[in-house]
Image (spheres, rainbow, N blue to C red):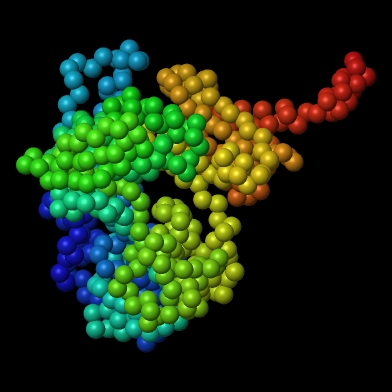
Length: 509
């Protein structure tokens, strides 16, 4: 079988060869189709992998179709390589900032960019065993590689084979949205699909887009020695997140050396003898062009819905929002469902995982699990990390939901002091009729871990009092959650209750 021409497989080294051997083996032979599959899954990213392995584990006959590489964006060009790059960048920054703790490394920090990218490829290769085609085959999934399409409401063709099915799930994911900037295609650009194949560090990198991908990679590259200009049309980065928390992230990125050009639009791009030239429109009227070596596009995602034969399958879709689904993730064809980035506004690996589990229940067992009831936290892995779950204060105000907000400064925690934390906060929003959590934001070290207990409490209907009763080890950043819970408890001591308590203590003297 011919390997797909995928950027993730470049450069050709031992790690990418090991990756390919797992997620698209050169010698792979597609199986002979069974008479009828209980479940056909199109796309082997996180949603497709979870759906297929869960269904096969329950005894269903499952066919899994993948055009390129198993593991999807998460393993190959998303979460795994980006977090590997972030870890290397944070190691470099830790050495630079060690003087704060009385440690003075001799000489400057020397960064072997090729070695950093080798670490990225090695991490990906190691983790690829979990998404390996052979593993899924051995667990009872019929894995098909190649380009295929629906040919009927219950049939899919790939490589001359016709796969008929009782239920189908479309999990084809999304890709980078490329803005229609004149000259961009001619000058050339990077996306998340190509940036991790770099072997030479860009001297000056322009990043278009101030969302999670743009922010994470901007900070990574500047800490690894590139000059970075982040350009976004908005007035601030990360527009979905709490404004006060975002301001801390922006301040740290600027301190690291990221040049933030907000409320700025790229009007056109030219190729030069040494790189690219960007022409900008900004609020201050500065029209001077920006000379860079590379351009990274991080301006959002569009769903992968082309060339799937959706019309023949009776599945409605929109080029911008993706596959149309109801609250049970069923499409306009009652036999076919969808999960993950191809149909969701929440384009996170963990959201795809949750939707896949829901689809298995609904598609195979006529379940009525609703996607609208999923509580999806998220985290942007900048330094400081920024995590969120539920409502922000701005969303609560827009929906006219009354909340009480409790804020804890991470720098004032005992663990914050000994770790040298200079900025960070936990902000918890509580409904006024008790201690039920409406939402929370954490910005600081390990924010992604700190948000998880709050998501657990919200999902299971636990209030802050449950956190207050829980004993946490000392000293940890999780103490911030207890402080927030204790502050909430104090507000519940009304004047009447306090008066009764005072009478009790007078009586029991």
